[in-house]
Length: 153
Image (cartoon, rainbow, N blue to C red; front, side, top):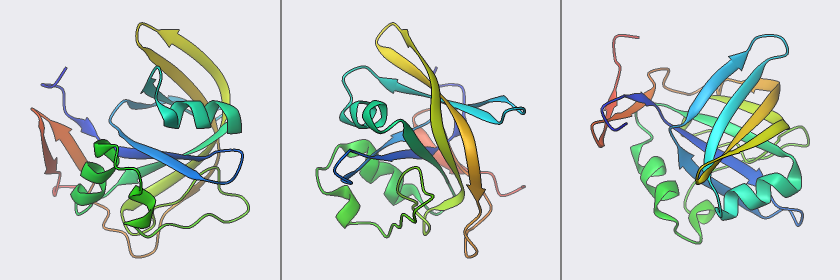
């Protein structure tokens, strides 16, 4: 599947103690307009998935073209990654918002999960979409095992 380019997101969620969790994810897809629904695919056994299933909420931070460092950081599994990025979470946030790195953020509540092989497909009903005011609108893409931007957008 590395030959199929896609957008890059960081999926975030709080655990029950409010501790932030997150990981880089390129398996993100719009599913339905009514109700607005996204899906994300996370590896079975992922600590982020475990926290997400406990909290029943998650945020999809769609990364802009200048957010490669954040994508690498959240793909690395570094234990203190939230100490290395600017993030916020208001009372309505379904997970931490990476406002410096995202061109759009969707807050979601889990509506369904499906286990498929070694991954879990998590469907989330979108409760809110935010567009950070200072965000670069060009999305970060990943394909052929490298990052790229789509400056034509």
